[in-house]
Image (cartoon, rainbow, N blue to C red; front, top):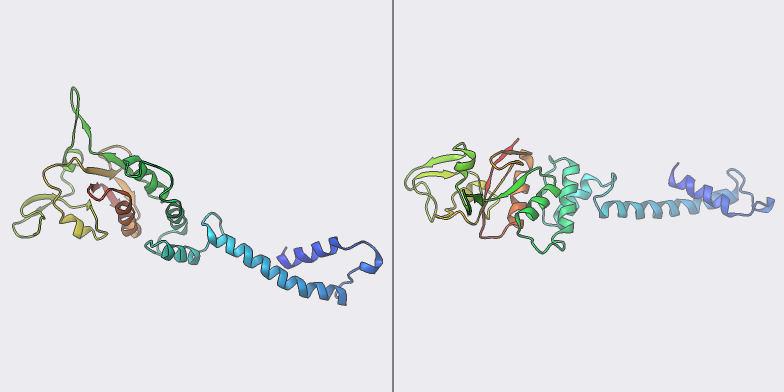
Length: 235
C-alpha cells in the first residue's frame, strides 16, 4: 500500500460514521482529501528518505548516499567496492574516534579495521624469548623471504635502502605503497607491528579495489612513528 493510500485510509477513519461525513468514491469530498493527501504523502516520503540517507543502517541507504557521505567524511570513494562494505566503513568513520582512551593500541586498530569490513588481525612485534623477556624481529623471521626484494646501490636515496634486501610492503605515512617502501625503518624494530591473518605468520585477504582505502585507514589509526608490515593478499 502506497503512502497516499495509507493517508486516505487514515482520513476515512478519523471522520465520524454519520451519513453527513461519508466520502463517496470519486466524490468532491474525497477528491478534496485526495488532493491534500498528495502533499502530505510527499512530505512523509521526503522525511523518511532524509532519515534513510542520514545513517548507513538501513537497506534504503543508496550508493549515492554512500558517495555523498564519503565526500563529507574525507574518505576514498571507490564505486567498485560493494555497498555493504562501504556502509561499514562509513559507520566506523562516523563513530570515530569514540571514547576509547587507548586509540593507538594494536587491538583498537584491529577492531577499527574489522569494523570497516577488513578481515585482518594486528600483531605487536613483541616475540617472547626463552626463558623470559621479549624481542622484536624482522618480518622475514616470521613470514619468510617472500616479500623481500633486492635493491642495488643508489637505487633509493634519502634515508632509503641502498643495497641488500628490504621488505616491499610497508605502511608508514603514504597511501602510495611505492613511496612507503622506500622508508628506512632503521636498526630497531621496536616501533613496528604486523597486519595479516589470525595467527602471527599467516596472511589475510583484502579486496584489491579497497587497497588505498585500507592503507589510508591504517595511517589514520596508527601512531606516526610506527611502521607496519603488511602480510596481505590483495585479491
